[in-house]
Structures are given as C-alpha cells and as structure tokens.
Image (cartoon, rainbow, N blue to C red; front, side, top):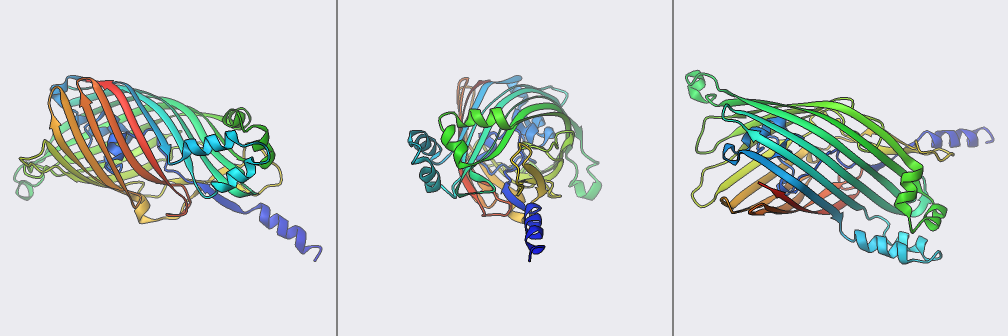
Length: 398
C-alpha cells in the first residue's frame, strides 16, 4: 500500500481537466452574429475579413469609400453586473457563499472597437484596412475550491492591424455544363498582426477574499502572458450565374502563420466552407440565407488545466475538443427592410452551435446601431457549459 499511494498521486498530477473552450475569435460583428455567425459565402461588410477575405468584394461600389469609425461593441452575459456587484458588496465572511451561489454559471464581458476603411473599385478589386482594440473577460465560479479554485478567470487585452484585398474574375464559358458555371470567382487575402496580453487563473479562497475589490487588476498583474504574431487568411467566393436565386459558395483558410500560441486567445489554423442564396423578391430590399461549416478539421482547442501541486502562471495548456457536428454549423437569414441614403434596417436570425441567434442592424444617416444575442459553448463538449450573450454595437459610418 505504501507504494500504491504515491503512484496514485502521480497519476492524479498528470490528469487534465477541461476548463473553457470558447471558440477562437478575433472580432465578432453583431450584424453577423445575429444571423448565426454565418458569413463565409455572404460578405458585404469590412468585418467579413474575419470569416472570408473574399467577402469584401460584396461591399457596394455605390458607397465609394466605406468608413466605419468608432465601431464600438459591448458584450455581456446575463447577470454579469449582478454577480460582480454581489461579490464586491460581500464582506469577508460572505464572499465564498456569494461565489457558490453562482456556481455553474458563466460570465463574460467584452468591449471592442473596430475601425475600418474599405473601397470597392470599378475594376472589381476591393480593399480594406482595419484597426482593432479589444478586451475580453470570462469568469466561471465554482462551489468548491478544487483545481480551478473558487473563481476561474480567462481574459485578454489585444489589438491588431488588418490589410485585405479581393479581386473578382469572370466565370467559365457559358457552354460548360449548360452555363451553370458562367458566374464569377473572387479571391481574397488578408495580412494581419495581432498583439495581446492574456491572463488565466484559478483563484483560491484567500486570493478572492484579499483582492475582491480589485480582482481583475490582481489577475492581470500576477498571471499576465504576452504574445504576438502574424498571419495570412485566404478565401474564395464563387457566385453562380442565376439572377433569380444568386447562389454562392465560399471557402476560407484562416490564420496561416504564428498566432497559434500557447495562451488564451490562440488562433489556430482553420478551414471553413459555406453556401448562400440571395433570392430576388419584390417585398424586401434583400433576403439572404447562409449555411457554414467552420473549422472543418477541428483545429479549435480547449483550454485545460493540469492538476499540479504548485501554482504558477503556466497552469493551462491546449488540447483538442471532442468533435461534434453542431459545434461546427452556422446558419442564418438576413432580411433587409429598407436601404436608402438616409435610413437602413435589417433583421437577422440564425443558429449558432445548436442555439438560436437574433439581432437587428439600423443606420440613420451616419449613426449605426446593432444588437445581437447568441449562446457560446464553453465546455469541452456541447452543452457542458453554456453562456447566453448579448451584444450592442454603436458607431459612425458611411
């Protein structure tokens, strides 16, 4: 028995525990998230570079230089503020019980600003330049202080520069397969640089009690890890020659480069495909349907924590999550109600990781307003830990 006990502890020390596997992302546009995050075969926004750089070819030529200034978005989970206020207002003897009260919930706060300038030239070449600054924070309370402590924290402050270009080419001969491929092929590419400071921690009772008034600052000061890298995204978009339905298919390969660092916020290389239709109907300004299958080869990583006797800032590592088809499906519909030089309104709905999404997009003159809701999956398996999020976007653009 004396030999078995130490071996048991050694085995326990080598085990891995899945903590959090929020989808790797750089920026989530509320206009796109409202329709299920599906955009590989639609495009039309400067933010389309985050799913398929070929999509910027859909930016309307009539808009000239399209500018999106101060594109600020804020994301939060249900009861995030209530949880933060309850912890802050609790005295030392109440903090642990307050955290236990919210055990099993997940809380997110995200603020970002994506400013971009795009131009679709008359010779079917489109360009886009963007600057991103963002903060992403995720907190998961635990009833018992185990390997993850009573408070698990994953967050990052990051920014990036993005340069994209897309070129449209004519389709194949009209006598090929009765003209079915007499459409147009667009090839797009994005070059990007991203720098971030991330932090991850499983805080024990003592840390939470001592730093409950400046918890996030404490985590950042003691667990911060700096990373940066370059990458290239490549995408294609084929628009078939059918004016009634306007079908299209898209393919993108994202994050070819050095962004797959060992930290929260890693951006692994991933491949995505999508198909869309935009039927011409008399009663709507525009109607779009899109279905995407993202991360085909399951490159997405889960953040895991090792059971180790010592507490260091390198507690987390990456591991593949279980393959679940629903985790890879994005589907959405966008219904344009009105679009003129003074006012624009669009309704969005969709399916994201097996849960509904909804949203709207409005623009009055140069003022833009967007709203969306979607559900993020944070566990290593679908349904293990779900987080319903709400996004508001406000900006100036033309």
